[in-house]
Length: 149
Ligand code: DQA
Image (cartoon, rainbow, N blue to C red; front, top):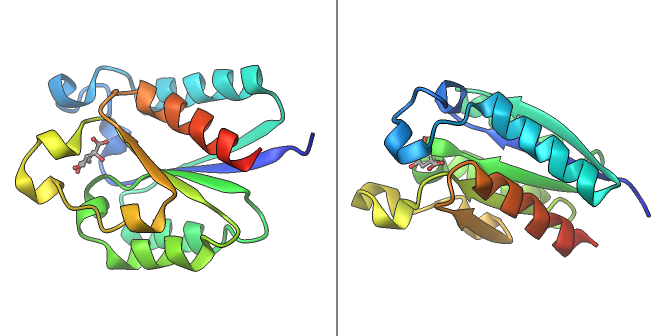
């Protein structure tokens, strides 16, 4: 079984998880979510994860663009950039032929303010998982690995 390399990207303000609006996003920190993902990757076997969080749109666009040839898939929570960044959506589309992405959200954005209902990035992804707080990431990893294997 070939080892799958998955890039896990997190956008603006997700470094604040744990204390950021816990009623909406839960109490898990980003490190704890990453630890859960590592445990799931170990349980699945043959998965290598690489984590990156940034508050800067350009850093995320650069990581996505550089993923071709290095990664087999992307898990991405674009955070607020979901609703605003055509540049990030274009980067995901640019690599989608070889690096499929799954969009993840902690909250169910469809049940929140109208401005959060539209995702610019979703159409560049193979699917979305949202609304299960930190567990959304683990579910998204399972979905991506199922898609890739
Ligand atoms: C989020 C939802 C976005 O609307 C918001 O801007 C975030 C987090 C989520 O995971 O629920 O920062 O992506």
